[in-house]
Length: 228
Image (cartoon, rainbow, N blue to C red; front, top):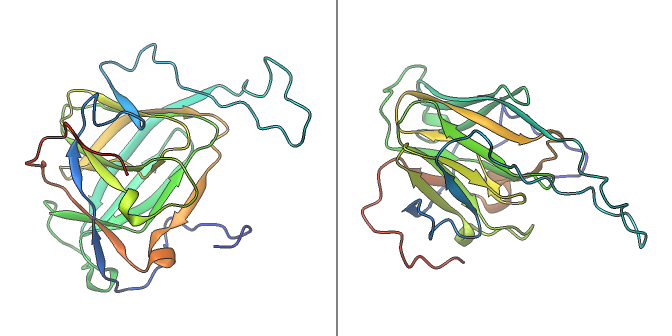
């Protein structure tokens, strides 16, 4: 992707057919989320990390400046439209095609609302601040994540299964995508940095695969999971 290219999230620039790369799913716990973020009991009073504006040269940013944009809050909606998973982030006015239940060439106009997977085409991170997803209903959800670094690789990507009793907070610079519901639709309280800088990776174009994220609860325990 060139520096000037604008990502069209409602009409992804991806092939109609690609191989699938299986993403491991692990249960979200305090231990397994170390480095990525943490589970949140309640959204009220949570301090969203804001990263100061970076210095452009050898002169430093004045203390107390560069991090004054604050946060913005709203509702993140995820829902299945046939075999297409769509998202809407009211906090930043974004609408997205998050993925599909099958290769895009096989998508039907109508389909089952209970699906086994999401085929993911894209991930991004926010260098200006962290982000909170808190379920408005106590239903399980998944979020794909990868640790910071522009040299993203498929082996670094995992998906965290959250049982819905708590929210998920991720640190700045953590690769992620929108929240994946385990039901036909779910909504989440969303809070994030107001600047909303975004760095994107078109997985389909860059790696020639779709990420296959199963929407089933993992059978293995997350304790002892080794971060790549």
